[in-house]
Image 1 (cartoon, rainbow over the protein chains, first blue to last red):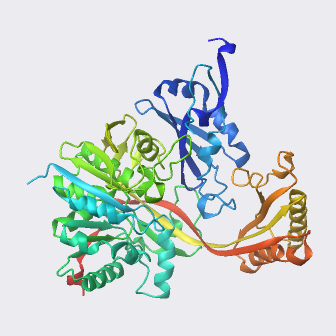
Image 2 (image 1 turned 180 degrees about the vertical axis):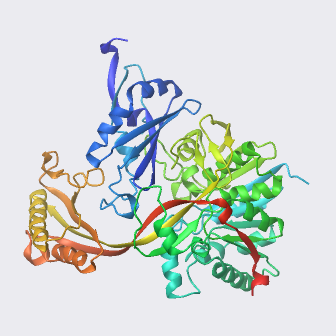
Length: 119
Length: 458
């Protein structure tokens, strides 16, 4: 598909997410609203891009797990919680809000793709 | 006789959860055929250390402080309709919890109720404080000479199943894996063996989906216009229907808000999971990498495809040590030029904090710009993205073992009332007693869980 057939959207428009914490490590699930967009996530939401997105918070490593039958991705991000619930000075010690930081990432989708927003 | 379906509802997903959520779950379970269970999960990693501190102050305490709020509205109905209750209300004092439940049961007229206590999670009973301090931790944190406040092993589902087989109406545990609260009843009803990895995996997955209460039924999910949830204020808590062929349906209490959809189940399935092929528990290593979910009716989702691998030879224990103090203080600036006044206030605070000459970490935020999504040392307010006029709240946070230094930083925020920029208002502060936790792995043969009944105890 050529460039003029593509548009940039935030992940928030095509996927949902939830963050969980264990120590100084966060995991964030990324679930496409439509199974058809799973391929877009696979191609564009790479470990490298996610690490870059969270680098300001000290993230040191990202591992991406694929769950094709759901479908969904699961990102495990090391050292992103500024110490985690034991010692982080951040208001959000658990990193609960980080799922919506992930959803700010821009991805390219076909202009014909319907994005989620019923409101 | 092995039942065809076991129904298990969840009444609470953490220690601060809704106290009335269990009522519609019990109403729904009461009308179901077959064995019925209600679980309460109220024990986060650090909750147990706080409970241990309570117990040291008063030996009668140290169990879930909300126990009575959760149980009083539903205990009698559960007893009368044969709904068994399984919970980690015990925290640092399972026997104390059991005695409290017995007292409530007496008041409600639940005659001859059988309350079982699962003990054996307290690692300090089998390992010396010094051995624990010297033990390597999974996180690499050195425990060193820090006082061990609490050390508890995550027990599995077997002792819960034993308590139920011996006739318990209520089972009180201290620390166990959260899914064990659900797997225990399933092992009791279906007689699953210790190496029945597939079924143990399905039961563990059911427990994982239920253990956070409403998080699988539309709570912690709503995103207006994107993920809409009906009547979130009355979100119904989940019920799992597990059949003897290992099939699993997630549904929720009747006549409640919320929803159970493929989306809500997927979010909770991956919650706090790292490697989907290797979720370690005391009973089985759960593999959810091939799991499928399917909506099979209104608020009914079938979850299938869990795999299981041989359980680990070690059990995880959480060790809690004293973590010093955390100080937090806040002040608001609003109206014309509020962002500049907020920035000036922070400059003043930084200068004053330098004079304190401490090595403790100190963090500054301007809430209304970027705060929770920014790093500890980021200056987000200077990006010119935010209007000078507005309603901003500045915040300082610090931690350390020297209480006076931590308090001094809070005091600097307070002093802005008279000595800071114009029109700061709404000062608030917190000083919190901190607990640090670390995980260690313990040979499972060292841990001997025991089931007692309250009557035999007294």
